[in-house]
Length: 113
Length: 111
Image 1: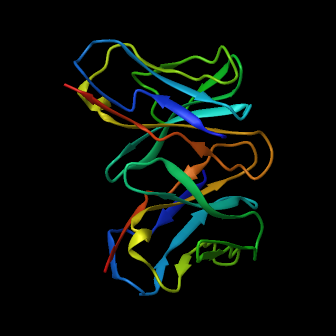
Image 2: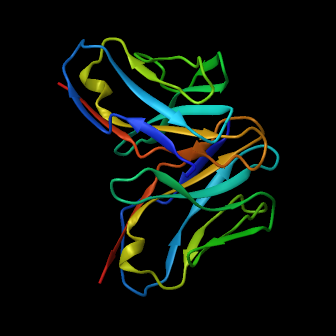
């Protein structure tokens, strides 16, 4: 089954404790992206990757890091989480070309105390 | 830059009512247009799409027509059900650029 898998789905952590949210896709997609969803603000892009070893900032990259060492994986790293990073995070992927349809993971709800 | 504007929610309707969620966009050229739906506790999934002017996307009884002259892609359904309660996002993409989302419209259908 074609899917984008995120882990963990739910996490409560404390300020300053490094964490990683993993994302893996099994569709051989070149493009992967991270979004955060906040009430009243819709979806905002954090980082994206056009292919292995190619990453770039989205609209709200501050406080986040990413890496793309393998085509299927695109982890999101919060080196020193702060309460304003409490949010619902989505990973997504798509193939280059085509109509641009994005495939989303089920989301990771993060709370930073 | 490219942008998408959706009607503000929340929208509350009774079952079997007619639904319209307005979406307008700003873009140069001819973007592809999408409606995504997010059911409670789930990620976004594609509902329908249109890739060129006058195309009509349809799925699950929902329809939207790509109107270049009014830069719109309004979502419609003739008779909504309780199971249609969700958040709906209009979005566009142009070439290899990122997908740009509207702010989302929360729809609640009462029995």
